[in-house]
Image 1 (cartoon, rainbow, N blue to C red):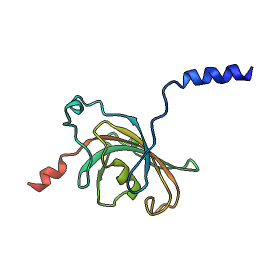
Image 2: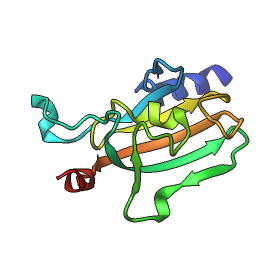
Image 3: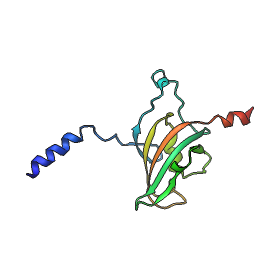
Image 4: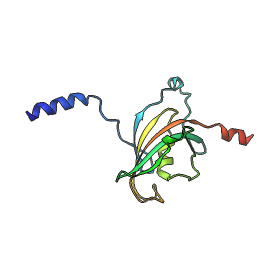
Length: 139
C-alpha cells in the first residue's frame, strides 16, 4: 500500500529544501546554489552591494505563472546598478549580499517591493559577476 509508497518518497527527498531566509525589507529567499568561486574560502569573493553594477540572469514569474522577466535569452546577462531603482525594489534587496556565482530564489510579496506590479513575484536570480564598467567611467 499507500504507506509503503510514502516511505519511498521520503527516502528520495533526503536533501532538505534550502532554508527560507529573509531580507530586512521582507523578501524571502532560498539559496539554490552557493558560490563556486575558490576565493570564497578565503573571503575574497565579491559580494553585491548598493552602488555596484552587477551582471545577473533573472527569471521572474507572478503567482499565476506569468513570466514578467526572463533574461535567459540574452547571452550578455542583465546589468543592474543596485540602489538605482531601475528594477522592482524586492529584486534589488534580494541581490544585495549575493556572492558571484550564487543563485537564489526570491519570494517577493506584492506591494511596495514589487511596484509598479501589484502581484507576488517569484524570481530565480543568479549573480554572474560584478561589472567593472563603472570603474572605467569614474577615472
